[in-house]
Amino acid sequence: MRNPTPLSPAAPASPAPVGQLLSPRRRTTTATSPAELAAEQLAHFHLDPASPVGAPLQRLAEKLYTAHGDLDELWQATTRTLATLPRGDRLALFNAKKFVAFQLAKLLDLLQNPTRAVHQSLGHSTATTLAKGPYPTFDNVAALFSANPVITRTATYIFACTEWIDDAFHGREFLHEIYSRLLNPTSISLANHIVDVEAGPLAPEYLAWNFNSGMAAIDTILSHLVGYEDIILTSRNVYGGTYQLLHDWYAKASNLNVAVEFFDGATAADFGAALAAAQARHAGRLAAGRAIYVFLESPCNPHGRFLDVPAICRHAHAAGLTVMLDATVGTPFLVRPLQRADVVERPDFVIHSYTKDLTGSGNTTAGVVIGRNADMFLPKGEPGWEHTLFWNVYYIKGAFLDADKAYEVLTGMKTLELRMLKKCINTLVLSRWLAAHPKIRVNGPANPCDPSAPVCAQLSYLGLPAPLFTIDFESAGLDRLTFERFFDSLSPMFGHQVTLGQGNTVVLCPALTSHSELSPEALHAAGIAPTTIRIAVGDEDPRELIRDFLAVARLALDLHAPGFSAAFPAAAAIDQLVDETYIDIHRRHAAAQHRFGEGLRD
Image 1 (tube, rainbow, N blue to C red):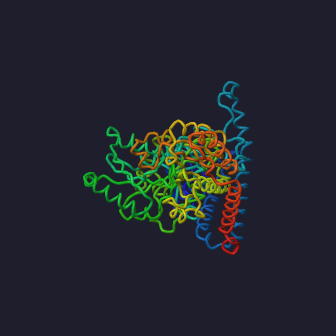
Image 2: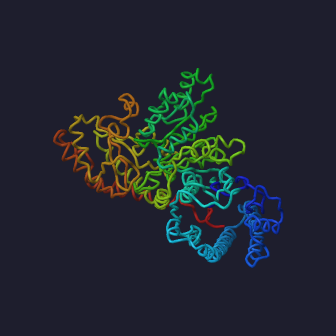
Image 3: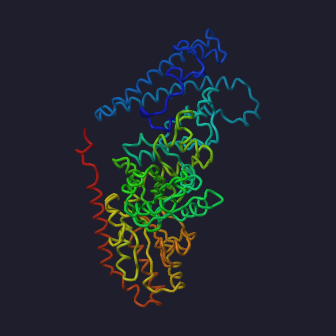
């Protein structure tokens, strides 16, 4: 398994000099040449180099020590020259290295039969053979070349020798993943992949750790940063579970007694005013050495509104603050905050709930935190290692992501762009159709009148809204029973599910479900009314969604609000809206792709 830090000149130092790294005595050896190292290796395992098996084994080991030096030279040459190589040369280099990987694997494969023969010659009883199972290094070499990451269902791993496992426990040997509560090949594959997607060309600067849910990811980063009586300044519209975690655990006097401050609005000016107020209100805590941390959610839940994250980050960093961003709702399809050219406009940590659109199927729960390498992991003993997220929290708490869940996320991410593009189109269609009704208020940037529409237009891909918005019927004068009967009749076209980011469109009443932990005052401040419906848009035909919404309005609302359904646009207008939106977005999407002469051709 590869080091989770991407290969770069800044990768963590090896636990031993080149050549000695492969030795079972890598930390205590006095040998310096390949020949000396090979002889020492045979002595370590009590083998006579003059025996019929010892002689070829020593020659093989000597060649491996020499090959390690060549491989290290290849790594260094690659990092020095890669940026200057023409595309054709990079393709040639990739395929040459790929073939070397097969050659090395073939050597492992050829080693299996003689090793298996020795294992079989030990003559274990049937009971022992059944209890121990097949030896794990046999027959697994071909799994290296599975077309998809292998689902590594294991709690623990075989280690090579005492000095190698000692290095592993100090974070200096990633071939030994020790225990799947810490590292697992499938989960690490996902972690590296989300960094590639989220950070793009800046991926070598970032590292990710995966968790068994989005809330576990949020709790981990908060646990990592926030201390007793610190202050958290957070955007008003956050997921209800996040609000509950902040308000009911971190702010609880018997826990951390953290002060939680909310800010309204979407701009750096809004944030700056709230920051100044928080600094004044908590001057005593700040004087005592406590700190302010910034937690943002954008696009936000439940309205799908965007914050001006780059400007807020710039303001926060100027004040010396750390910024966490929950970017779940937007996904890297709409916003990639870690790819801002100016580092001060990037959040320090980005959080995703994989559960939602990144997976897209609703088949699993998972989460991730992405941060700069030095903030996420350093080998034990290096300056600042104890302040990294891995050692401070992840290594201790155990909210790891298992292999099966990681594989579900990896599989789902393959269709992210296709799904999100369709969902965003559907969101525009539904929002515009609903906004045409005089008694329905549409909250979210798909409504041009929404206060966050300009920020969305500036920051989101093609100015597209996230596939999440709310509507309310406050101006329709509906009594509670009428509203509830209407909502309860929206199924099956609108699924009654407490989630978002699936293939189907789902609805809920935030005041009664996702944000039910908020007080009436907090609900009002968050723009959540008794008749607010959160719509998490799916991939269905938007005409069918409109058809059933209209049918339920006729069934449940016209009796108590005569003519309510008649105020929606006519059929021809609906077809025109769907067609024009679909064509417009696809044309703009096509125009936004790289031109052949702008990077796709050397």
